[in-house]
Image (cartoon, rainbow, N blue to C red; front, side):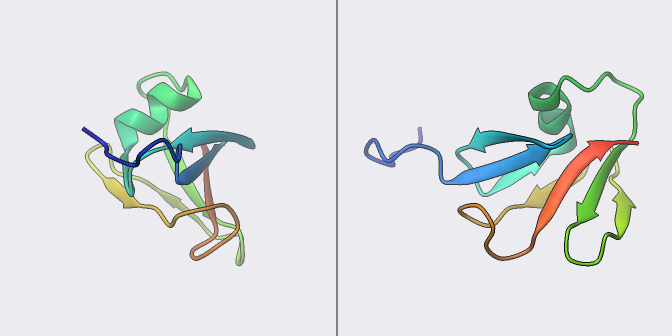
Length: 80
């Protein structure tokens, strides 16, 4: 159980230009699909917002997140 003592979500996951609150420091591709309403079989891409580089995520991949919004590695996810 997450014991953050009522501080709320510490992470923001951007999927298809919509921000979603997230409580853990990692997210899996299936969790990205559920959160973003992305159907099975559709590629999930990680987009580096600093370089605009895209990378297709493996279905079994776990992505590390940085706390807050606009800090650390600037990425978002989108449908492929």
